[in-house]
Image (cartoon, rainbow, N blue to C red; front, side, top):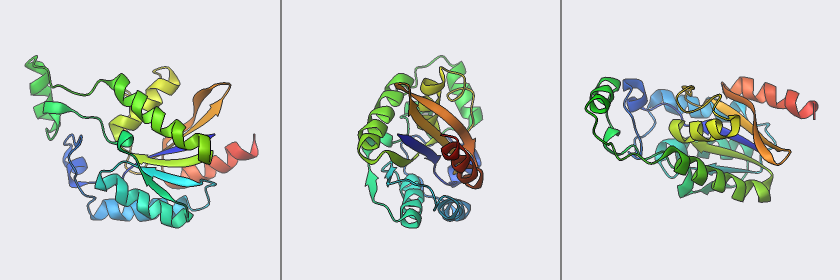
Length: 197
């Protein structure tokens, strides 16, 4: 089983450094171009379906990819961004001030995010074997952290918009083949990985 994890295209909140969480912020003009370029770069992947978070920034990115791949698109609530609670919508400076205050933001636990993400991924991967998942930076990072034993992901990796990470299920567990690369590089690396199987 193979899974491609893709962060959505850019939004104005991304550009401003605001934490988006569950806020349904649309792609900006750059984000729409990124979604289109990503779809074009990945159109030769052997994926058999595309999964998306219900938030429009992910859904619009996923629609472009599904159309390029000519595969079905499924929306799954489990792929939504982490709920950041009171930190949602804050700039880096505002977040730092909130955290320094010692107050509890009420954010969704990281382990719970990784659990729901992996459950969704596995449900579809068992049927479709090769899937594309379009989600969000924090949610994808929890999966990368879980699958890498904490070497990458949460607290260590800043995912680029439409950055691609690939997981393969080997020896009874998910392993990271590559992570956070531009779509063009992901297409090239995927061919190399598949040729060396």
